[in-house]
Amino acid sequence: MDALLLKQLMELTEEEIEILSQEKKVRKDLYTSQRHFIIESEKFLDKNKMITVRKHTRFIDFPKHRHNYIEINYVVKGKLKQKVDNDSITLKKGELLFLNQHIEHEIEACGDDDLIINFIIQPLFFQFIFQYLNGENIITEFLINSLFNHTQNGQYLYYSVSEVEEIQELVEKIIKEETDGSLMAESKMKLYMGLLLIELVKNTDKITKNQSASSQHFIVVESLKYIEEHYRNGTLQELAQHLLQSSSSLSKNIKKATGFTFKDLIQEKRLMKAKELLETTDFSVRTVVEEVGYDNISYFYRIFKEKYKKTPKELRKELVK
Image (tube, rainbow, N blue to C red; front, side):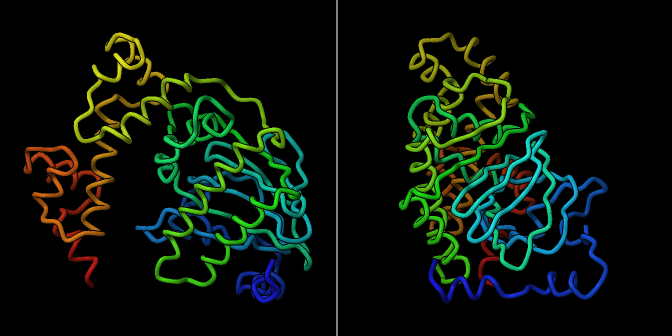
């Protein structure tokens, strides 16, 4: 890693200074507003961001907890000892550990010479990834269990990839973008994270995983790919023909695997795309509505406000403040 970046990351944070000067106890209010120790992405991510990087706090044991997001632990220097579910894992330099939001872990205190980076990622960030991941593999299984709370399967992926240069370079680029804080930082981080996942798929021989319940991965992956490409005018009937299933059977299988109907999934994609267009283009609201596949603007306004708690015009007003 770049020497200047490494020096910057090794500096004590305010939280670490407080831990060293006072009683060594985790301040839960910094991590959660809930009674149970569920670390919340809202504590670290701005509401419009999907991904961020945070240095793991040293000098203190972290009690058993889980997250409402996907976390990736990466060791820059030293090691990270933790118990994940019922497995004891010592993560070493250059190694990665993926944790979905349904699994619990507890962490031993890190010392002066340990440097661990945590990637905090909203599960919905990964939806577009499915079109680039062909067939069933460990990554798609992990992402499906993470995207759809319906499964409730706690899962981790432990990657021993310290010798894979392409992966190490991509991880460093993501960290550097976060610390530099440039105008296009998050867009670059998303790009690099997508490339990282593709590289990890190519290195499945270096994975250790816990056992988890299987789900109908092929159906879910193919359905999400279809929705990604045909969200404007796609239909359950057309998808069913593509998958050589009846519409009713496919509908039941999608609902069983994800907890959502086909209509729910395609509406979610349309609303996400509409929000993206409102934030990044000068299209009129009517044009945005048409671009994402709706012809009833009143209906669009209603479901958009239900999801984002504001109208399209209110969203745009906030952007110019």
